[in-house]
Amino acid sequence: MIVIDEKKIFEEIQKRKPVSVALNGPDGILPKVQETATKIMKRFGVPAYVLADTTWGTCDLNSNGAKVLGAEVLFNIGHSINIETFDGNVVLIDAFDDITFDKVSRKCIEILKGKTVSLITDSQHLNQIDIVKEILTQGKIKVLIGKGKGQLNDGQVFGCEFYPATETAPVVDANVFLGQSNFHAAGIALATNKPTYVLDPYFNEVREVSEFAQKLQKKATLAIYKAAEAKTFGIIVGLKEGQLSKTFALKFKRELEKEGKEVQLFALTDITNERLMNLKGIDAFIQVACPRISIDNQFDKPVLSTPQANALLKVLRNESIEGYLQIPHWL
Image (cartoon, rainbow, N blue to C red; front, side, top):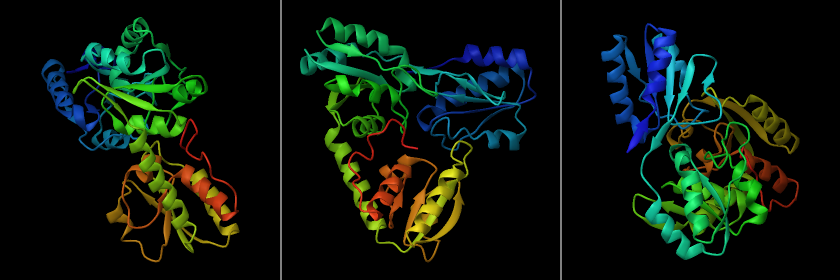
């Protein structure tokens, strides 16, 4: 069960005395966010708006939505990082899952006993990482937890940011991801080129995701070579506050024009196949908003992420693209 740090929310409201607040979080915990909003309204007598649009992480806080509503504080729930606030009025609130990993950890011991592993997780299970480390260590598995960097805590990854995993990759046999997310685990596998196992406590299952990750990489690589045949490119800047990478967009524009390509510039909040089909005369796209949009989703035309676009430039220059996803941050 997801447990939101409501104590911190209530303390912030008591301290700041806002006229209204907003709350948001990942889709999977929205019912819990609703419950917290109801408690705020009953306890403090102020409007508490639930921003029900999808929020994918700290690059996608939807603080603009809170500003439009006139909410003086936005509580972004479930995206724990190593800082507590953005711009003063966005407060990051922990939401941990209280499920235990005891049973599934014992299954992991049967598979990886005697190995050295990197232990990694997402925001919802950071509270379990030291407990699982102790269980695996007692089971004769050597466990390393990589250091956080940027916004990441030790042992934590985002869907596009893998510093703790890439730090330990040279000295481990495999990665072990705590949680249920193949999304995060596949990124870890691709960034480290190491066998990666998911410890899923919900189904009491240990599963290896390298095959799934390789399918994603093959699709991503095929898109690069298809894009190399394009004459006209559309470069897309994301309009979400943490995805406004104009510098990268203009860099790719300059580099593609040097290679004789025509380039148009676009900006979108949500980058979907349906939106892109409205844009005519474009053979391929590069989006600098979120790398996982290109890696995980299906598009009718090539839509490259930043690492794919860097690889494309190498293809156009007859250079090797080996290991183009084996980097700690896909931006």
